[in-house]
Image 1: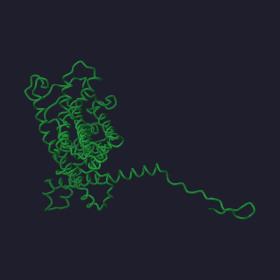
Image 2 (image 1 turned 120 degrees about the vertical axis):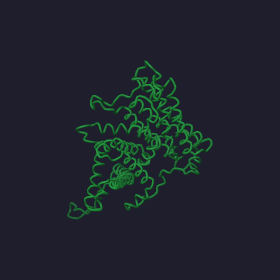
Image 3 (image 1 turned 90 degrees about the horizontal axis):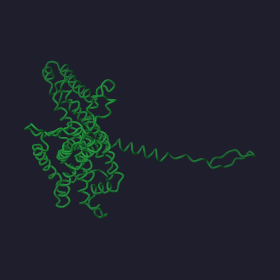
Image 4 (image 1 turned 45 degrees about the vertical axis):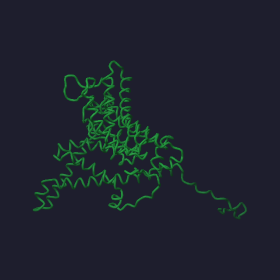
Length: 416
């Protein structure tokens, strides 16, 4: 109540206008942003820590540092820091460069990130359902084999029919290869880590055998190399009228669409709720009436299909023919990408672009400084190490652990 002067000189009590509470929509947005920042803090610090330790590795592997450290420690340190600056500068130039002058480095980064987005989504989806799909590499190979089969086996089809068929074939191939461990897990309890690892080796041999058959093998060649896919099954380059003759193709758009689809599946659909419920508490999900076995199989099928799209995108968009060893272990990098992205589609896309940048910048870094490409592998390994041990990162930077909400992702152990 507020006292004001009345018409006869007295005072009257009138109700005061209450303060308006802050908008609930704005508060929700701020809460989401704060939650996302908390989730990103440990991954970002893990990457920064990996770069710092990578710098130490560069310094200790620099011959100039050891030649000067005894006589002139200051000059030795300057030489070591110069080597670090040269290495990371070469890495940056190869991955990003100056976009206003040359867009090719960013194009190569996104090109290398494309199969990693698919593979990272495959592993992240499994994580959400409590499954460790370590067989994405094999699913990539089988997806590539199916896509190549459609790409070389059909002739005379228009692109609007042939290309979707080839992409779909890649998804189906990976899905078939994911169905096998999913069925074994659901029906016999066989651990998916064991079965998917073994199926990786089987897929390598299947691809090698298929590439020696007349249907796949390039005529006149004795090595296991497929025929070139038909032009109607080739993913076109992305906006050549704007970006010129770049290798980046429409597989990136399909990968981003897949990320949106996975986000919708996980967080906006009933089936996605079942995936997450089974991953968080299988016993509770079973008590609620959910079919655990069917959920496991469906998760592995979709996960395998996403990995198969990685192989299809590489064959249809970049290589245009299938060869053994075409994948530089994307399926295993996908595990780190899913962890770095907190098993969220937007995080997976960001982590895949980061790993794509590391791969794109590795060769220019070696050419510019002579530092081996293996440094990138060291950085990736360190990122995995720190992501897998968040308590270590929090201890280094003295960050308090957040409260457990019960929604954290946990993967069942070997005895589960």
